[in-house]
View 1 (tube, rainbow, N blue to C red):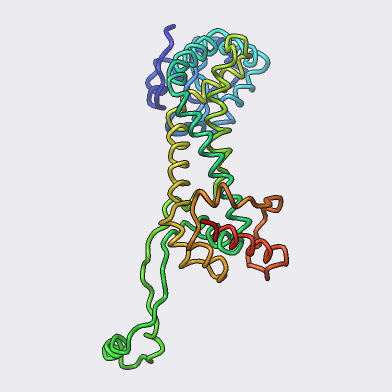
View 2 (spheres, rainbow, N blue to C red):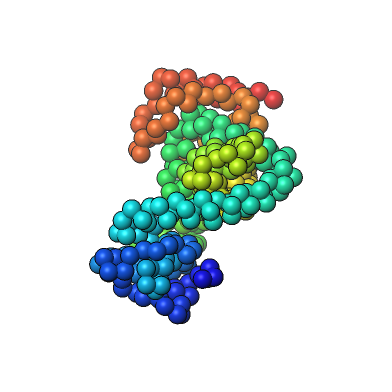
Length: 323
């Protein structure tokens, strides 16, 4: 029986001897034909199960009929399923995984310089984020809140002129002058704000750069099949993971930039932090502002500054006064 290509549940339904409800006691497992990954969940073909899933196997039964089972519910066939799954992994999936992994190694080698650059940038951005958390605790708390709420618009409250208030009141006579006293104007958008809520090193280095380096060092033919399949999954998502790493680094550099620091002045509540932002640069934040990051928990409501925090603010001001 030739191994069919299964892209959707329709490929299962049109199979000549496909059954959608099988009693494992009456129709035992003969062998696994092929594995599949569906775009849309489809019920398991075992009677009493029918659990919707995307990943599973097309299996041949003892009477030459076929059905589909998930990776776990196939255990209803008993010990035979475990033995068949191992045979299929070793004989079919393992060679495919080795070929897939070997196919991407030249590409990773060509990208060696870029991969190293992304790792360095992620380390730098992570340090800058930690320094900002320690040196601008109240501002960082607000940025963090905004990041989780996807609120990157910076608005400024301004007092309207006497003429503006009178014009608005003329259109709404029942309203009071106080209702029209202030207005909000958009000052800009904080590009890359979402990076504040990310674990930068984990997203870029652990998930991408370190794995790319590691893959070039190991002898994949010596790996157990389970590890091979894990690496194959990572390789199949390589472009997606690479794009995400690049996007995070780009966003981080946008966030820690003069334009963003200028916008942050409209967000900062603490006067010392607001003043410090006027002279802050990415280089100063990374190279000079060496902060104690042993305490990373920022309270949801800013508490009064401790003596240590006040001293840190003074140190920050001194650092930023340097040319």
